[in-house]
Image (tube, rainbow, N blue to C red):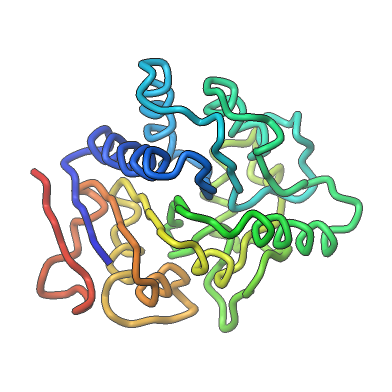
Length: 256
């Protein structure tokens, strides 16, 4: 795992955008896994700037989103479908038929999960998966637990995740209690992975992710088993890590 520490959120976002752009330049029909939330917003803004400057072309790219809330329609401003179109897809030249996001209003969630796995498999797998990380170490909506889901499944959200996400809703009780999420095996089958983290509230999660100990209680720690992971974080998120307390298979690069 390569750990790149940037001075601030803007530089972290720019670095992530350049890495994603390099994947698309190398393979025009790349299959990209995407995340939502506050952390990747800067990356999406930079990618839009690059597209407008004709530095990147998304016409042949196919995307797969990590997750979606159960019970929210595509038109709901708090759905991840709405987030992706409002913040990214509406501003680039990606084909709408190449956009894949779990359906939070599916009549049969189990079928929706199976179908989503088939879509990824039939596309040849994900070339580059972008991840954020929760303060409790979750990735996607794979919450800390004794056992983790392997494939795309409906998951129950932990109280701390609901509370953290309530900032996007009118009230905490409005936050859905379940979501469809790629499972850990689905994520780990991606050829390359980028994990983004920003802010002091992520320091404990980042430390636990790279400490060398792998535990389902810190789902992100399973990324240590993947051969091609780049973690891009700002200095606030990196405050508790150093060469002395990270796993031997981690390479730390400080860019400021």
